Image 1 (cartoon, rainbow, N blue to C red):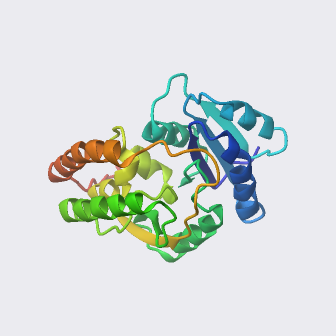
Image 2: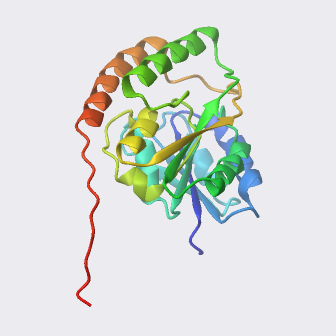
Image 3: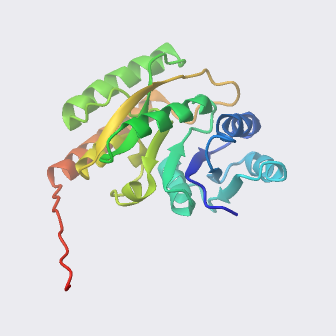
Length: 243
């Protein structure tokens, strides 16, 4: 099997009705465009998401399926997928189908036009298809985050992103880190770009988050990420040969 250029990581928890449509959309968006693999990480779903994924492997050669033995959360699922990925570049999608796989080529085009120092291309949901309360909460949280972290990113909560695998694995890991990738990449000395993308209403299943628990976790995370940024230290290393 050839080594893919791109690995598409999709974390899922209880998304059995969204699995097949999303896999088919990923294949339609990427097959014959780029060598790719799809890595689904089932976060110990209580429904039959895993069984649906395993059945799809019979007809989708690019599909790989991982499962967490215990439920570990979205950030851990993303990291598990990235660690298992064989591609040098990673695209992530939320498993609920609200991200559009057709936007992955748009992120790849942005990468082709960017400098080598740009290691993250973050989706920016310019037309959110969520409830009014969720949109308001997200707008409020993004404003606080931008002011505190100064990451110049309009939307860090969007699940569709493109980033270099090695750069991601070099970042400090913690639960919920997937929401702070632009700030963490910038802390590491890399540039980031926000790319407008499509956003869709959830077609099946229910959201795993609510505004209250997201806010409680977000306050603690913001303080932690701000501390990491303040304590960051980057050093350029030169190596000399003995020629």
